[in-house]
Image (tube, rainbow, N blue to C red; front, side):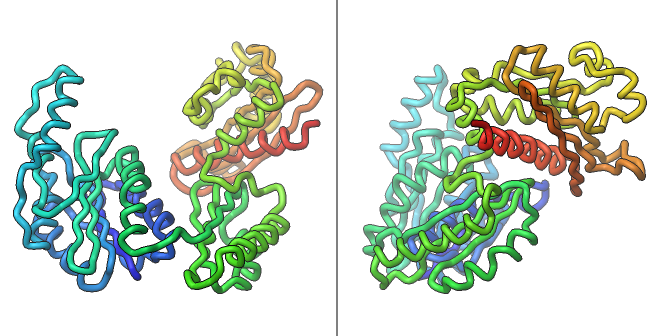
Length: 415
């Protein structure tokens, strides 16, 4: 059984926007033993959406369309899908009632644009959206299954988990296949693959997917042999993960879908320690990552965005002579920033980042991408220098993840 994803949105073709939904959908389908064989990205044109769906139905058993279900004139996914399936669109009374309830809740009047979201192809099952106004749709088409879901991840993902995956299981009599995930930090993708390739190739019945983001690599292992005994599959996957962990050691930071800020925050909480941040080139990015987590005030009292040398000197106590001799981007200055913010906010740990994120500001000695990180604990101060390549946001994200990873390792070693 094969599946196909169609991402709808002209912004995905011409405005630098990236379709991130497909990665998550593909991983969830893989857990059912249903590989995604094809993916299409189309703009907001009825005929393009129609043609994409028609093409998909000719080669895939499951077709999932995302995006283009909003209330504006360029949201025409319903129309395109309906044309591909030769179905009329009719207003669904249940959806209208839901939209009217939301309008009253928001103290608004239901507009004609919003009523458009209640237009449903004949024979479709409505999949409620509890985080937005556009419902999802499920349409069996002969022996094929067609799903249409809203584009925003906070709306799409719950419908995918609560409705789409159970419908596929029930319709096809599929049970979820065993799967594992390994999250790794601070290792280049090419280096990591060279170290683990010989391991995962010993398990041909497991589909291995490696996804890379700045400073983070996610390894997904999905069991593919749906005819095998489940206990055998679980045992084989456990053996694979044990070998991967043995090879990568401390670089593995999680076996769940969680980021470094969540892992480091949990460790701070468990150890009853607090963290203060001094951020220069990351401009508060690490603070945001930490405060995205509910309850982070228990271990993160705050930080200082010390972008200028004046702030480094006046708030964090960085020595002027060291700034002049070593420069703001140096391990010496990073160490003083970490120590300074730790004392300033009365925290157990101070963590600092200072660097050149570009596109300008680099020198032959310190090119763009040079970043210094330091950690200060009572009686312990250590620092690191890294060099990253890429655009400004990539350098900042990689630096933030590297800093959090060093914090994690330091906490791991802390008795």
